[in-house]
Image 1 (tube, each protein chain N blue to C red):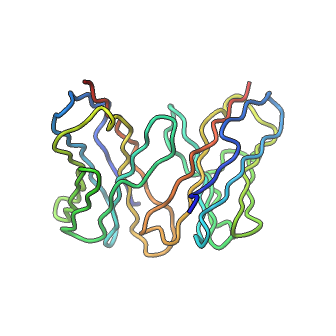
Image 2: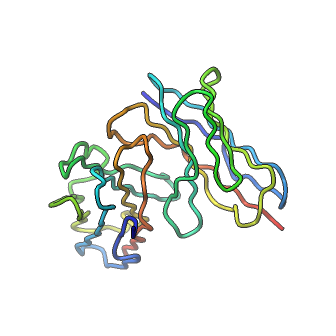
Image 3: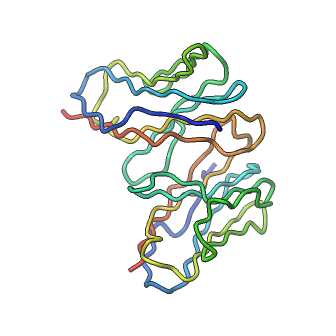
Amino acid sequence: GDSVTQMEGPVTLSEEAFLTINCTYTATGYPSLFWYVQYPGEGLQLLLKATKADDKGSNKGFEATYRKETTSFHLEKGSVQVSDSAVYFCALTADSGNTPLVFGKGTRLSVIA
Amino acid sequence: DAGVIQSPRHEVTEMGQEVTLRCKPISGHNSLFWYRQTMMRGLELLIYFNNNVPIDDSGMPEDRFSAKMPNASFSTLKIQPSEPRDSAVYFCASSLKVYYGYTFGSGTRLTVV
């Protein structure tokens, strides 16, 4: 079945460091790919998405490129801030209908000043 | 748009009591998803509805759990009787099409003592 694998956390970075959170997937067909972010005490929020190969999703300084050849959708940010401390979830849907998203287990990021 | 609205935000109840969690999806969204999140098990899909019809409840942990969606603007998740191991954060999410992404509510933090 479809699956998403994220790098294990937690990830601890100093402010202004470069961030990469790895995400790889297994899916039939041509999935749409997502990154969600969960700040402490809140629900998950859609951060960015990409729907076809070579698409780049971006939002709030975060970027991820849909790489079909490596089945990856790694999340990157050039300079993290303390306010980016959160849990990040990679997800996919390989369905054009309304079957649920398949989520990774989440990666906790802590940014220290 | 007020987003997905869940109530209550926090619920503390005694073991054996009935608990009802409520969700109002975004107007026009035709799919609704209930999730449970714990430190040990992460994010688990409990049940989802398309056009108010339950499609897959295989994630519901036991018969003590039930969910309904009587109309397009309201859903409930009920636990009867509640047990301490049901303590978790319960999220509701809705979508128009899953490949657009979900919108999550802020969650209900349930504590069963």
